[in-house]
Amino acid sequence: MAEAWRAARTVTPVGHLDAAGCNVPSDRVLDVMTAHLRLERERGGYGAVPDLTPARSALAALVDGGPGGGPGRVAFLESGTAAMAALLGGWRLGPGARIGCAPTEYGSTLMLLRHLAPRRGWHLVELPVDGDSRIDPDAVRTRLAAGLDLVIVSHVGSHHGVVQPAAEIGALCGQAGVPFVLDVCQSLGHVDARGTGATAYVGTSRKWLAGPRGVGFLIVPGLTPAMDAPAPTLSGHLWGDPSLDGGEVAPVEGAARYESSEGPIATRAGLGAAVLEHHELGPSAVHAQLADLGRTARGLLDGAGGWRVAEPLDEPSALVTLVPPPGDTAERAAARAARASLLVGVVPTARAPLHLREPVLRVSPPPGTPPDTLESLARTLATP
Ligand SMILES: *Cc1c(COP(=O)(O)O)cnc(C)c1O
Image (cartoon, rainbow, N blue to C red):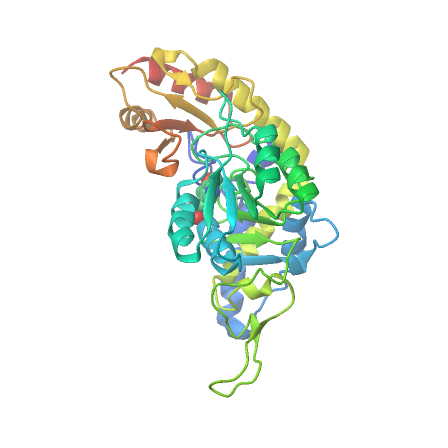
């Protein structure tokens, strides 16, 4: 698997340890995008519209969409953030609706909820986490029994490598008949996201799926009439009575209500190529290799120069976060790493304001990362 990943890329930046920020697309992904741009020039953009059905099906298959799944339940948007904003912004939850989320939730989702809640009359309910920052399913059960109208969980955070118990939470929400939104921006292409039964999934292209920048997506197997785009569009909605004071417009079938017909079509095709490649590599082989890399990285980095790994050392993820020792900072360590040709991330506290107390260093090796890259980072951390 690691060899196939490397062979698919004639150029990989040396020391790239930032798959969770922006991964390295394969040659085929670039070829699909440039070929499409050429075709748009030759035929005119409207004469070159690609069939994105296989791309949509491949994405839906990653979450095992259930009876409501399939290509018609996938919409492309410009980013994960835009997908979440469209999903929550358009969801007709009435005043008094109670929305559960954890303090580990992604900063921009919390910002969006804090913006919408007072305007819509929604109440935010905390889903508590345990000492490992893992959401406690028993507490979710209690909160559901007390009344929730929506549950939102990030499967893996941007700032912390713990894999949240999405299948357990999804099952509890399913039993309670409460919709469940799973943010898979850091989990698709990284850890198994099937079998969670979520109502909707929010994802992005450029991270573990190794697609191009500038595209995110929604997968909505559990679409209900209350779920619509925040604003109607000609491609996503049908006229009722088109007179000026006429009837309500109605959303079209499926996820197309969320998608704009205009957009970076070549980029959507590039994401499709990346997801098909991920299926060819074998999602379980990729997940296993990344869990291995994560364990290796945590073993090598924990304690180096006094830096401490924030998540359990055997967590089955390749998103590794490190807390600085007194006298060092994530920013300084990332700058030292850059001088040693190592690309790592710095996660500011704004990314998870209810959870992060100080910026952490994020190390997220793509598949096929050689162990000596991680050893070299351990030496960099140990020599401020
Ligand atoms: C990156 C990320 C997002 C947002 O995705 P963008 O494409 O950057 O807008 C949302 N949630 C999590 C957990 C992320 O890591």
